[in-house]
Length: 532
Image (cartoon, rainbow, N blue to C red):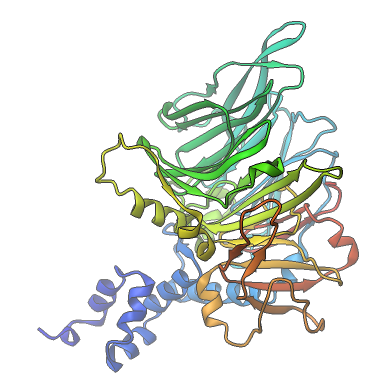
């Protein structure tokens, strides 16, 4: 039977099961296929959605033509994102805690690093009819050290630190994680237990631990890492908060680490191993939640041990709580019209930024450098799956991949000193910072490879090139390699080639001084005026 004899609705339904790259391949099969797909609103929406690294929101009742129009409007806006700077907020207190998720900005401001109240801002949307709203929860009932949110689930997780015992030179602490609703601070109805409690940790004077909370749907990761005495320490627990089950646990000494989810089944740790002579090894280690013994190590360039070089302040970041398509119609999502947003950034392809400080203690004048390394979660997940397929037995030793075999083609190094204080300076495959240019500007780096391939008008430049002219928003493609040549630290020069598209937005000088106080999501850029 000829496929052309089928009704158009059936053909569209069949082709809609293909991913967007396969649809583009089908357009090259014949003129009739090309014309049919080009004239189909449904298939064009799937192609443009996939090429933008977005996923559809199944709870939106908008017609496909409206979704396509809003998607094109949003993509056009990011080509000239000046209007995205329209939202600004005055924050009370000097040490606020904050989170930006799916159009909801949560702020807990205080003069001390303990939060007892929260303010929520439902931000104005540029792709739906949602109007801005705000509400405040004045008494949380606990002293909050940190929190993380998921507006789709009407969920906020509050971290409370408690001292179990207090001795002269040592204290015992535990962290309690409370599952509440964002709308009313009630116990969350889907939480199997209202509170989860971490294991005790003994802290002495001079010990330093950093704690992290990351949500991904039903998974909650809690990590603490730092130094206890003279020993590096890493502790990680991952729960399914809807069942209260602990699905992964790790406690190790001898190295520090920073955590990021790769997808729903795996995660990575950025690891540094250090002794008195300096950093002896550093790498990315991929774990699978269901198979703890199945591991892949992605090595970084070797450090010269004779130079007493230390790598510290390692911080690995992606979207704070990986964007996800909602799994239920929560009270918050319904009341704040969150489900009116027709699409979201893809949770399976996100940008990761690894920021670190390199300190060389050798010689009369110690020197220091700050670096950032960019890579994509989809790339690392694919490489890890290739190196350690699920058919291999789980008792094998970790598989180690050399830097030369994975790093140069799939990373981009940058020597700009990005601040570590803001966790929302990236979204999807975009990253925002103050541009390292003579004139004040913001730099939005888009690591979507399709954005680079389709842009034929922007100049191809090296990352160190100055903009040619400053008459407004400027776009350029960073295609030349970055070369890091530090012979006293690394055995050989480091080359990184991952391409990206940089959009430079001229701003007032007062804005650039706020580097580290920038936040973004898929629709907007936020600048805080008194965080620093």
